[in-house]
Image (cartoon, rainbow, N blue to C red; front, side, top):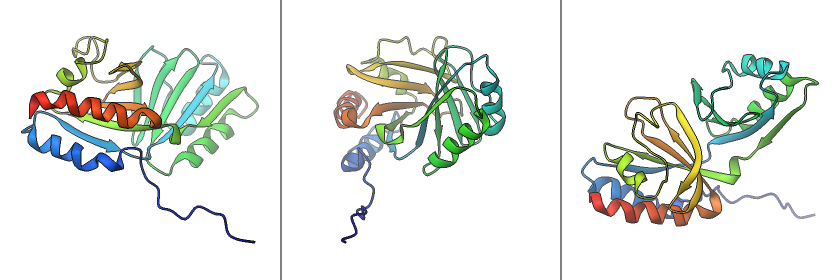
Length: 200
């Protein structure tokens, strides 16, 4: 029987425009930086925030799930995004999906929990630089001023009419993560590149 395993190298949703993102970064003179962060592990977790599983999962991950709406908690390479009263998205380094999923399930034990690897569902566009707020404000309905949407905040919103999860990173000058469904990533990247022409 023939071996049907996939042997082609992984290809990220925005690999075909990596050069265009890099060119926009160079020609902006430092105003913006655009890049894809491909293959980040993304795990959807749903559980009772007040139940025993929430604390157990937090201990297993060495990261407490955020309980405040639209906030982010980060510990090392793992980031937890609050998406709803009983829903979080865990974002980790590429290749950590199975380990994260296993640790969550083991920690939850018999408690009701939903753990789904959604890593292939989205890719992540990094938007940083002194004009990152301005660029994103062209197509996002949120008030992105740091007083309203500062570091450590996240939201499910739209950008250029595309549904996204927007994360204001908390490291110095880290800018934003724009998590977008893979099927819309090319369209959104084209929109961002078009908006970035103002800074080149």
